[in-house]
Length: 169
Ligand code: FEO
Image (cartoon, rainbow, N blue to C red; front, side, top):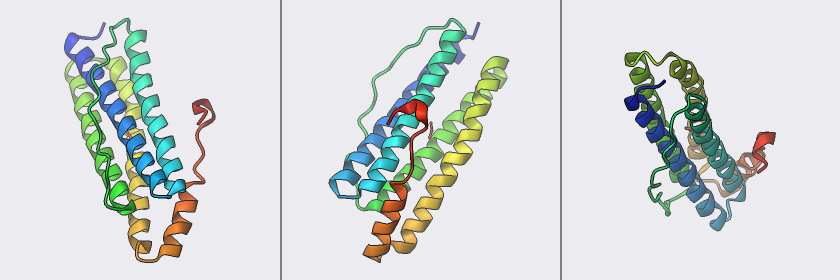
């Protein structure tokens, strides 16, 4: 059985992942409104991935026969200055989540929650990937932002991201 402090912390992280999902959905809506449909698609898939992260933690709690508590999801930002701004905020969000996962891992270590440590290792690896792809996109967008035709090419490229089959996006 997981300690109460560990259960609370995992429930908090479920909320963090759902906020992340909500925030990506807001970014996606902004992009679609601004006619960056490829970026909107990329961000919509990312939103689904964040939801999958929340569900993964929910399933873990239930597998340990612990209660799941869904908390209020904060309102995300709704306006952005530019496409670069959107992806800079996405990178900042991923860096925040990495910090949250690291703290959760540290807590699991202190609590001797060995099954949670194994589960959280998946998240640690995932965060490395997510920060890396957000950083690459920010870097490329900054290079092309002054050239509308290159920016549109980049948007088209982002729209080629396809959802993993189980997500059905
Ligand atoms: Fe679930 Fe991108 O953090």
